[in-house]
Length: 287
Image 1 (cartoon, one colour):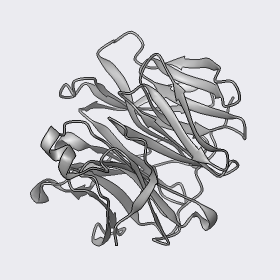
Image 2 (spheres, one colour; image 1 turned 90 degrees about the vertical axis):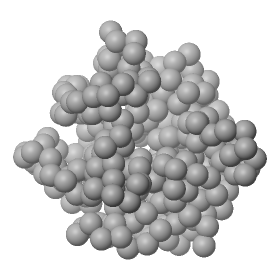
Image 3 (tube, helix red, strand yellow; image 1 turned 135 degrees about the horizontal axis):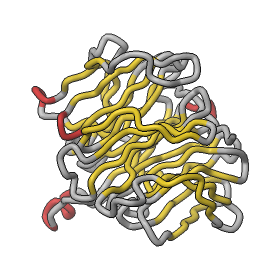
Image 4 (cartoon, helix red, strand yellow; image 1 turned 90 degrees about the horizontal axis):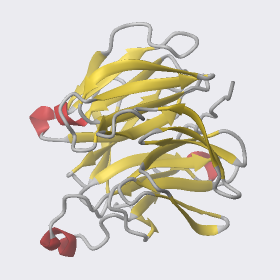
């Protein structure tokens, strides 16, 4: 059964969905459209920006942490004011932020990449209680940042290599070993994009170009798929009552006019109810 449309506003590059547990609202980004979108009890909302933003974490009921092409920001939902927490690739105009997510220890992981997907230009960073530290470099398209329910390991991917990695974490959420290969999707011609781990430990990953979200078990075996009516599925998130709704952003980027005519819902945001039970998104802890 295919996912249904949750929000019909088309995004050139939809990404970074976040279910805010205190507001019962989904927030997400149109990266190249330079805007954040939301839908919840207050209806649909939208915030335009003067630069690209790609990911968020929740701080409290009124504030988010946002990642942009130049920094991490403290963002007030009431009036849209931003306060910079730290720079992020601010000295390199060829880079931007991409996939990101808060970790169980209260930190925030964020990937950077070249605006033209220059090979090896990206990295994965972690902001934790005021410190920004680079974790992994030499990545082309940073994606699939997500965490085990017990906080003992993280995943990330380089979409350009079609490889999803797994890395052990210490008690404070810092990597404690070298990353290990978890999934190699290259033989199947699949492109791993954003991902999230559910409460049972399954990895749900959007597959760019395949029009689906795929769930893999801890052993890397494919468990099930959820189709979406858009070829470029970009990132999933769990939310809704009981955290049993699976949301997914999609993108129009790279689609020809004929492809857009064949996929009229492309770029919209989708939801499938009753798929599995997710984790609540973790809170970002300020210093």
